[in-house]
Length: 337
Image 1: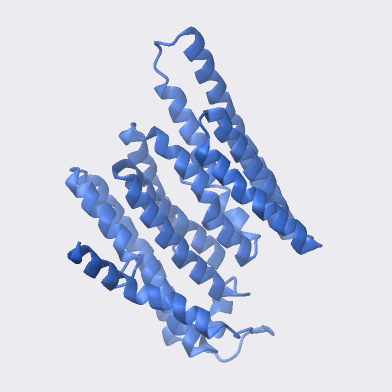
Image 2 (image 1 turned 90 degrees about the vertical axis):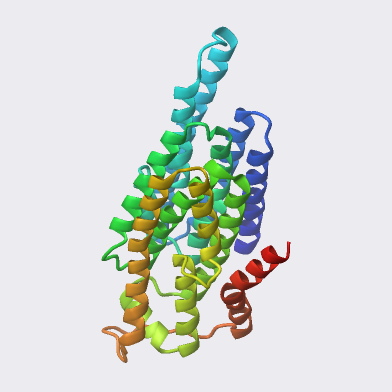
């Protein structure tokens, strides 16, 4: 019975995203966002007190963001009817702020790490990937204010890189990593919409791969024994984090390469330098985790941790093969075109 209602809400969740991105009016997009909110709450909530708290936090913040978006839509419709010559740029900025709050982008990110902290990895994967599609697609319709977007991108880079340092929770680390990658995606939005799609698909693929391997490990002191118990798991985990950080020759380097090239072609040198500099701090955070798990051999935990290292090696092998070889294949295809 539980699986049936989860399947029903997952179908309405997918349908709500399609409604929002295919709507002809802002009101239709808002309706899709509301259906999305009502669909995700039963999925992420459970009998566990921590997940129930996370679902309440998520509902409150999303309700505030929806109120802001609906208010700006009504005001824009009112001004269009009575004062059609008045510029709506300030209202559009307010609506964009509501969308940023919905997707958990800095500086309106305060709820995002806290909500992820109370969810299991399957729900975290849903929040990190699918729930970003609708707000980002709606933000694409209002990319004229380059200064506003540049400010949001820089704040996201600075906040995510600084707050991810000395972080022991893997779920919060993935949340700050998502904020950092959203900064790159917003830079791709300003320049070229197709680059955003490539970036989002590759980021989602890597994130799904990492969350699939995490199982029941939520903190660093649980991660080290988990990885040391399986050399194959340790190798795949490191490859995924290298790809997530955007280091060549892994697939995660491709979208960042494309974004940097597009920024330089449009003479946005300062923004690209700031993004690269603060992404290097995130790479340091990733490398610290990887080097610790590589060097430290922890044989015994300070509590009885039930390690579940049984993985589908064929599935993991196929997924990680694409991470290791796709950049080379894509480069060869581009040279042949």
